Amino acid sequence: MTATALRDPTAETSEVNRPRKQPPETLDDKTVALLDIGKMRGDEFVDRMEQLFAARGITTTRYKKPTNTRTAPVEIIQDIVNDVDIVVIALSDCGSCTSCSTHDLNDLDQLCIPGVNVMTEDFRHAFEQHCAKICFVGPSVYTPHPMQNRTTEQLHEFADAVFEDILAAITSSGGILETQSRRPGTT
Image 1 (cartoon, rainbow, N blue to C red):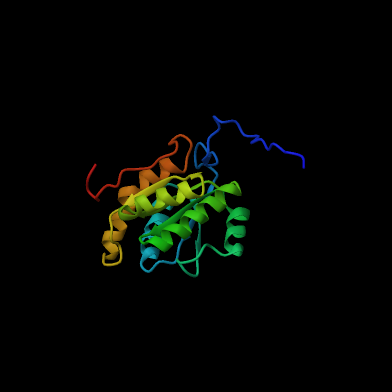
Image 2: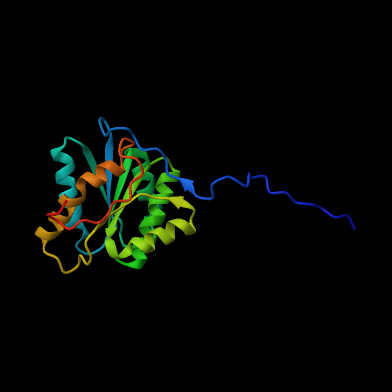
């Protein structure tokens, strides 16, 4: 019997995590996908995001998953890849939707559509753990938790409070950003 030695071809100093795709420097002439994960009341947050992007003259296209407890269907992923340059995924506020939206962010990033995940602050650790498990350095922005019992006005305030952080996370001038969660009305 012949002994065989197997060698790992990767350098010992190589990174384990895959960095995200470089986002564009600016959003000029870019289209942003707003992917509503299908969570109840999340559409109100996404409605406000759409208004904020429009006020800046940034083109958006909306997509909605049929359920927040599964990853986006292949058809939605393909439409995003064919039609837009960057994605904002919102609004996760539980474990299963955080996991699924993290996989959606990673899948789109691997298909050259960089983006950011928006979720409530209570799921920061879950997002970090999911990213670590799939070896992906994913950007995130956080809003206050919970969102289900908030008014439409409060959800719009949350969107207003994190909009600049989202812009920074989806442009290379903002770098890879994991924001500190901020309460609306604070700096």
